Image (cartoon, rainbow, N blue to C red; front, side, top):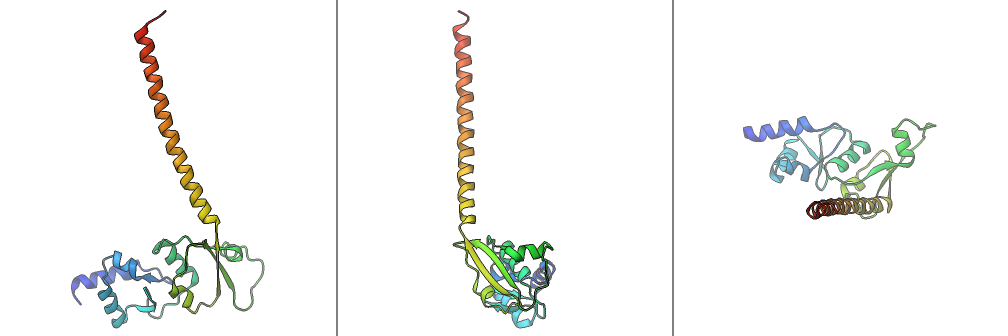
Amino acid sequence: MTTNNRMKLKSTLAHHTQGTVDLASWLEQRGISHDLQKHYRKSGWMESIGTGAMKRPGEKLTWQGALYTLQTQAKLPLHAGALSALALQGYAHYVRLGKQTVYLFSPIKTRLPAWFKNYEWQELIEEERNRYEQQSEQMRTERDTAREDAAKLRGLVEALQTQVKDLMQTLGPR
């Protein structure tokens, strides 16, 4: 392994958060080619958990770590909701027995990647898609457009006021 590749490996390991997944696309953005990622897997530095997703060997993944990866590396608009969100905030009122259900919410068009769906989580993952996020995005876009239009209108009004003032000065007192 060349010195440059060793430095890339050290940097990758230093930036890895325990319990999370490293996406191949994210690693590539950090300068680690697919060939180098393959070399890391063969050398035992990383192990594949599905297409485009890797973890550190021997490291235990959590659904929270995987969700963090999807939010930060893949930029997917996902979040824990319902009882899952309350439990994360420390508001679970009872001890859950058996396999816990985790609720993940996302806009209708957002899809969980296959590696996430196929991984053997200790919890049962329920994906809930809703229109709220999509409507919120549409409302943000409309709000931003309205603000831009208002700013343009203010500029036109100020220009008109300046022209009227100049005209009044030109005409003089009556």
